[in-house]
Image (tube, rainbow, N blue to C red; front, side, top):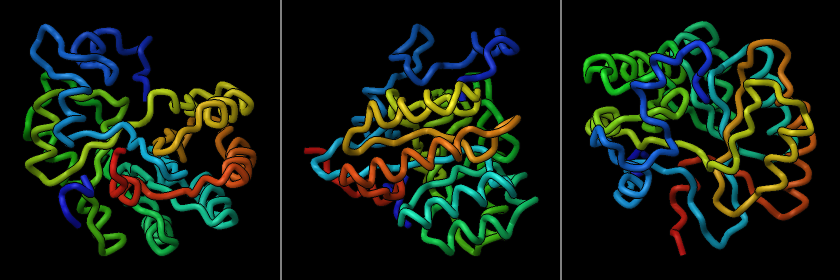
Length: 248
């Protein structure tokens, strides 16, 4: 795979950390960290791929989960939809058969750190590299395949993190800002559905989760989202497939 195939922090309990990390919606900051425009133009990070085709990428973070991921895979199969799962290394080690199923059914796996680590500006290259490699090893051991897509937990990034990912051959993948469903916070099925359907655009990357603390609302939301988007003529693709589309 070539290089181009390159959660709101729990803020109330991480106020100090939040001062140290760079929000994904920030532009260049006084600390010297560069913003979205810089990295998007260079192709080091993608948030979406606007294009003329009715394609959309559904992404799921924090799994694989033996219950939630299983149900989501069943729904995706029902609607002939492909998706990208940004997995946590520890979860892959616990559920290798699910990781294998994801790949066998035509979806793709992305790296989401080994233990859902948040990277701030003080995160060392060694720590970032370790998180990437341990998850990569877990994915390879489970599936025999490697992943070169990376999504940082919380969407927090720094120059150091992005440069490290680039050197390791990863494409950093965020999500469309208008497609952050907040499903991890269980805002209500209707809110999740409305967020996706009310904002759907060609080339969107939708953020959802296949591992949620408490009873998930994502599955019930998908039961409405998938058929409606398909009715509108959308095709569900992986992030790697989406990345092949040219911006008009």
